Amino acid sequence: MIGTFWTQAAGKLADRWLSVSSSAIVFWVGITIALLLARGGAATADQVSQTLQQRGPAVQILIILVALLGVTASGLVVQRLTAPALRVFEGYWPTPLRPLLERRLGAVGRRLEKDNSRWAELAPLIFEGKPTRAELDEFNRLDIRLRHTPDNHLHYMPTTVGNILRAAETRPTDRYGIGVIALWPHLWSLLPEPQRQDLATARLALDNAVAACLWAVIFLFTATPLTWWAILPAVTVCLAAWFGWIPARARVFADLVEAAYDLHRLDLYKAVGVQPPATREDEPAAGRALTELVLRGTGGGKPAHT
Image 1: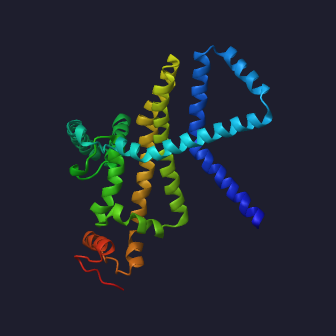
Image 2: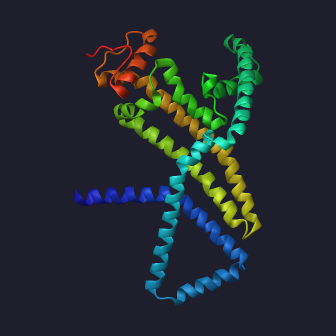
Image 3: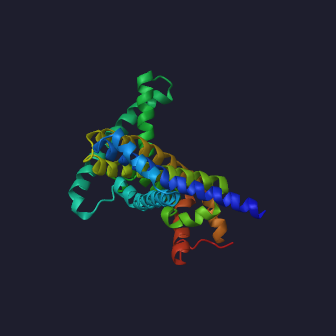
């Protein structure tokens, strides 16, 4: 049993190290290639290899350990920057950028108004089963976009990623009255393990996409002065992350958050010892009362304890 435990623990540590350091390894390999190209290419690589071979085993091991520590440390630094970077990608910008924020919100509002109007035009054709293929494709695109946009215009965000995640944070409150962010730790404790694992995996995938964009930006500013070709992979990864990876993974995570509240919100009432609402019409008021009860020990609706 002890051997099995340490085998599993070692495997988890290895997985953890790989999740933190895999992107860092790619980054440092790219930096190494850029340095070699800037200093003579293959000839410099041969010279470095010969120098290392002339060193003793102890020195070689020390160099490897220092390299691994550097890779891990840089990976941890970028990992710590992932959360604030994601907030920037969402559109939580500092006060000096307020004019830009207002312009972006205005543009988002106008675009969504057009999308809603077009969706309303196409909906009768879709529901009657008489659309063309182009109309069906357009309707599906609009439906996905509007599905991942907050229902209330006051909750709009200036970026696509921001609207996707804000929709998941506000729609359960609009439907059920439950404070999504406030009660998330409580709901998380009640979720079945498979659903928690799915959520954790989806959030890790989103964080990794943000981290990939950060690594690409760092690579752009560090490797480009060494060799011009670094611009191409750095810009390619940035664009792929911004327009593809991050929004796609944000949608998966947002859908899972909404599904958690759709399927398990009534478990919150039972866990707190409060009578669940009898009908869907009663849910908004009951959800607000439950949120007040959990956060402050009081509730305007005075939910009945079982």
